[in-house]
Image (cartoon, rainbow, N blue to C red; front, side, top):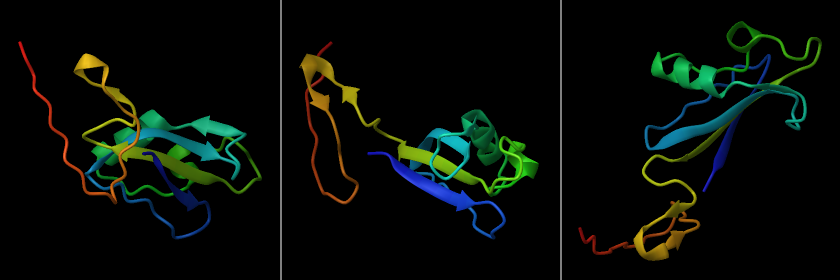
Length: 109
């Protein structure tokens, strides 16, 4: 499953991305995600460098001058994408992190 983390411009809000997830995409712009910029690579680079994520023009430029912006960071499980195809056509569509489950299968050469 994909979760969206958010922080608004002109606030003290920061986004902490847990090590158990990976950044799928990131967007900096209006609150409806209609106008703004894809900042996925920038967010990944900032996280790799240990920089705290805040919705600020200093980090992401100003794609919408005069408008308050929101930073959206979409994250997914680091060990399994939301749709991962396995051998023999098995498809795992969604696995909730709130559920306990056991997954086992044989791998033959």
